[in-house]
Image (cartoon, rainbow, N blue to C red; front, side, top):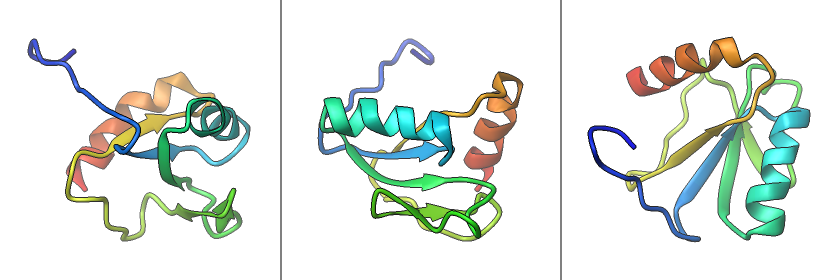
Length: 94
């Protein structure tokens, strides 16, 4: 909840997972595998090494990629919880 507003998503809302390693795979398994949410790709600093996961693209956070114009949810699935605020700030700027 931000500013008293809730973000409403449904199974068609595009979801991007930040982190394409083990935690990202767990996030994918939960979001798409168990619940059939619309995961459209991943963001990972090692995108040049991991070009795709589960047939979905892996984008470099420093590279250029287009997010859907409609509401898009980014689910941060990385081990270092101290990086979450930096990642959010960086994505908002882009």
